[in-house]
Image 1 (cartoon, rainbow, N blue to C red):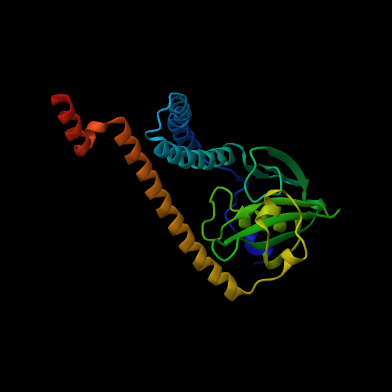
Image 2: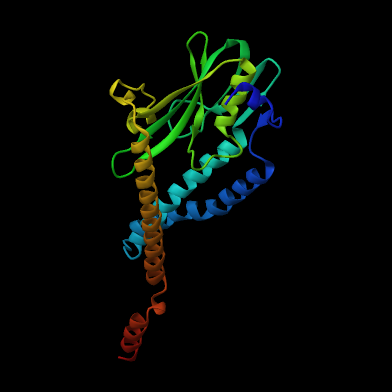
Length: 263
């Protein structure tokens, strides 16, 4: 895509989440917070009182709700903090700090003059092995002093309309008058990326389009299986905890209690 085509698009000089999304995520987080906080005192009370009934169900709920709260918190922080604004001579960005694939809760604000930009680099990075592959498209700005400034990662199957880093990269390249370099597909170690370590030569081995298509199919199957398993576990946890707290809801338990009272 040429710079002329990008500049002919409808002008959008500020990329950030809208007020509706911020309000919705804030509301969801505040609604979930009391349930999340109450789980841990309940676990502590049952453990200290020697009451082991329903512990397994509470543990499953605590783990599942903790993961959900973390995801909601990350999305909330992205909606409240992330912002890219295009000025006449520079682009001002407030984005997560760090090099990991998971967004950091610490943000950094940078103003980059267009004259300091050498080129824009995009690369599709493949994480995981044969069972749970993940394909993310990373974008970064390369300055003339060879400093790399990461913009962010997106899944091409689910691009965030508030922060479409593909479009942002194209607008930066058009305003700076530079090219966008496609580095192709490479495998990356998730452990090294999370810790912020640079890629090794083995990580830079290119991947063919056929392999990428196969990875996407397997990724969809894994996600479907994980979501189904999580739903089953959470449902089992709720059912187990309900029986522990309300034994009269169990017909068998109710019959046994009645017989004991009569004797």
